[in-house]
Amino acid sequence: MTPQGQNGLHKGAREFAALGLWALAVYTVLSLASHDIGRQPNLGGPLGGALAQTLERVFGHVAYIVALLLVCLGRSVWTAAPIGLIWRYATGGMILLMALSAAIGKIPPALPAGATSSVIAAALPAYFNIGGLNFILLLV
Image (cartoon, rainbow, N blue to C red; front, side, top):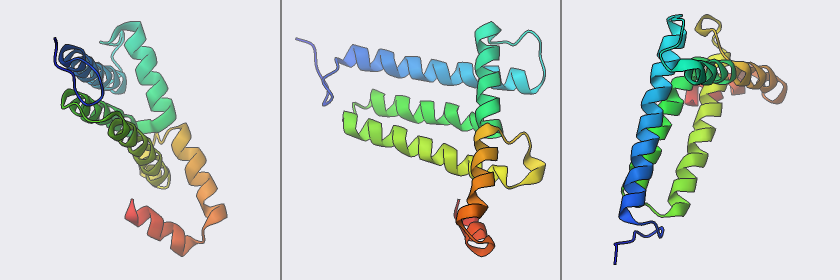
């Protein structure tokens, strides 16, 4: 019999999934860095170029956080965290991405802000007054 973790995956499958997530994180950083310095062709190839361009358009420079979240998710998979905890981490990571995008979208010199940043930053003043908006951005 092979050992199983709390989430029902075999140890080898968990380790393979974690290594895959870490490899994807390295590939994402390599593609984003190559895109930011303007290297053509992208070091990640056509797929890496498309990935970097999409992440930059959606999140701006906050896209590098995606790689950090992949590393954290890989660590959780490696340690056989319960699936509910992994979902909680993934949801929290998406909330963090949106909050950072909103904060970066309000800072003009930090361009490119990304589509998500621009949309959230433009919608915030309609729901909060200036004092409350600055407090929220200070908390982020």
